[in-house]
Amino acid sequence: MLARLVEDVPRGAGWIFEPKLDGIRALAYVEGGKVALFSRNHLPLGAAYPELVDALATAVQGDAVLDGEIVAIDPRSGLSSFQLLQRRSQLRNAALARGSGVAVKFYLFDCLFSRGTDLVRRPLIERKAVLRQVVRYGRAVVFTPYRERGGGAMLREACARASEGILAKRADSPYVSLRSGDWLKIKCVHQQEFVIGGFTPPQGARVRLGALLVGYYDDGALRYAGKVGTGYDRATLEMLHKRLAPLRRERTPFAPDGLPRGPVTWVAPRLVAEIGFSEWTSAGMLRHPRFLGLREDKAASEVNREG
Image (tube, rainbow, N blue to C red; front, side, top):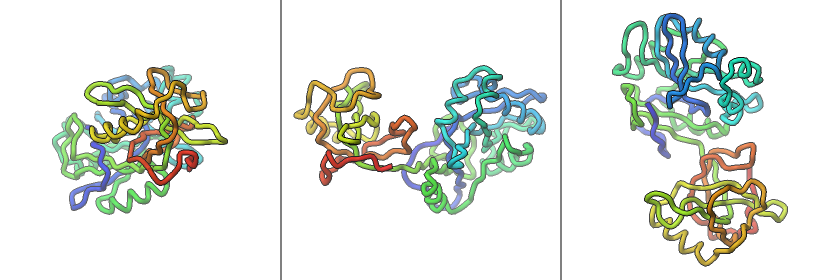
């Protein structure tokens, strides 16, 4: 079951709120003391996270199917870090995984099956009660905390900590194998101005352009910060193409480090866009960037990295 991305916390009764963790979604199948971990696209994960397999084998009471998020906690911030988890997620050798130096936890938030009973049609709040009972929690296997009210305050707290955001789920929702409006995700989004230095060609049904290439000035050089491929409707794409077409140039305006491969139309770095994003990566790229609009009140030469 997948959550639908929305911008606002839902109002009214009947919702529960969980922290949104920045990790890898996983299902755990426990049968006869044996554990199998699979990703959301059905890839086996046991060799990458052998300590979680070991912990689940002793923590889960009886046969069960459990849903959760595998995360690595950044010791500096205390927050889940997808980048840190990358050191583990590419490994398929249990010995290398154990020696990676990256500790992981499995945050459980749902129970689909327990002790011979199929729970997918039961309300979420009942499934969580079962989940709390059938697992002995510890350092590696964690029960995901939740609230039954105060979603707005929870989101503000998450964003103040620079966390990923929150999830809102209907307390009475069954478990369905699709992206559902009964589960919502609300992200903490940072935003600032960036200079547009190029754009990629459109693909599929999109018109005029595919993604904007944006950056910021650092010591006089325009540093590339990533592609922005979301946040557009057709009218916005038409407007951007009209504004960018007269600015075309043959050479990139960006400093050469880290530029993307593939076809790009370069433009003179004059237009400034407001971009929302979840975080900066360690490589200096934007994560989950989204176009919010053009800024007419700031010169391109004034745009610097803010965070």
